[in-house]
View 1 (cartoon, helix red, strand yellow):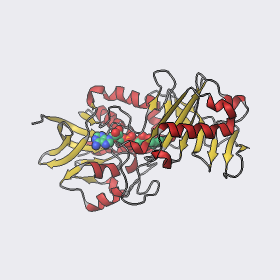
View 2 (cartoon, protein in one colour):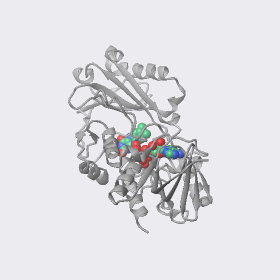
View 3 (cartoon, rainbow, N blue to C red):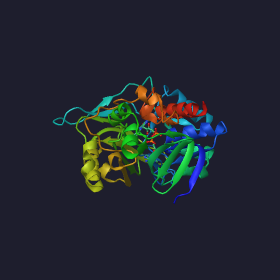
View 4 (cartoon, rainbow, N blue to C red):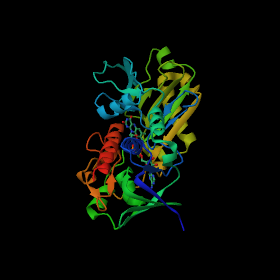
Amino acid sequence: MHKTNQTDILIIGAGLAGLTAAASLLEHGKSVKILESRSRIGGRIQTVGVQKNQPIELGATWLGSKHKSLLQLLTSLGIEIFKQEIGGRAFFEPISTSPPYLVSVPESQEPSYRIKGGSYTLIDTLVEKVGKENIMLEEKVVSIRSTSDGIQVETTDGRYHATKVISTLPPHLLVNRITFEPVLPQTLIDTANQTHTWMDDAIKVAITFATPFWTDQNKSGTLSSHVGPIHEMYDHSHPEKSFFALMGFMNGSYFSLSKKERLTKVIHQLTKYYGEAANQYLSYEEKVWRQDEDTYHPYQSHILPHQNNGHKLYQSLYMNDRLILSGTETSAVFPGYMEGAVVSGLHAAKAAISE
Ligand SMILES: Cc1cc2nc3c(=O)[nH]c(=O)nc-3n(C[C@H](O)[C@H](O)[C@H](O)COP(=O)(O)OP(=O)(O)OC[C@H]3O[C@@H](n4cnc5c(N)ncnc54)[C@H](O)[C@@H]3O)c2cc1C
């Protein structure tokens, strides 16, 4: 028989939404625990190479000046951002029968920014605020049950009881991975089943090099290709030029290949633009998000990007007003993005505090 752990508010998921909600609730004097199924914190924010000071983003990377809540959070945590360099030129490959063009690109009126030290800096700093002792890793939630005085949550090897529960799971995962007693309203289940989890089918690839030959050759690290398999690529070098990398998105349909096969295709594509220099890579990193069961779950029917993101049903409370839905896909603004995760985390914390 499991011992039941008691807390005011239980948060499911230690991604950006869950950590933002937890930090806000702790500031309001609530006791909070986060249950996270993975053995790592951050969810769809995953930076590798941090220890070597060579951060490579396999998940969220860019933000813009419109992302007010995220910017405010970064400022309050003392985290700096820097501009993503696009350069004055980019490769453009409109059609497979012609060679790629190197075209001029005007300076953007609304540039993108990256987080100094890598996106994980935001996660790491929030973890410091929340306290590692309040985050339970490898605790996959499997069921949520309403009780006379709260909610009982079961994980694969634990049992928790709370006054309120905040779920930060993408809605599509929530209704397919967790059983509810009593069952959730059918309209919510149907909507969640048709709600896209942003970027759950993305493949990110990153290649590091000893030199930035794309600038040395007076070319560009920016690419937009209709031919692929990489359809979008950027210079991912360290702003202080201490390491050099290109990072891009590969067409999601290449998920079924092996890592080695994908690498061969990546290098083959890059040699088209840069010649033999592309073959002299130091390392290759990739992440096929649809192979990660803590983000991806197969859909029953075809789903459009962002479909049902921010749906009004996600703004309601469930299970006697004790279950609050959060996570970027539930956000009424910028759903799918880091901004949406922060907004939804703050919104959930407010809802959990109000009686
Ligand atoms: C490849 C990629 C590129 C992206 N690029 C950008 C970008 O450039 N800019 C931008 O703004 N956004 C980007 N995003 C989106 C951004 O990553 C998300 O908006 C944000 O990280 C979502 O945070 P979240 O907390 O809402 O969800 P998540 O990060 O998905 O967190 C949910 C958490 O719940 C956990 N969980 C799942 N099931 C269970 C369970 N049963 N029990 C317990 N825990 C569970 C998961 O492990 C996860 O940690 C990108 C995403 C990807 C994948």
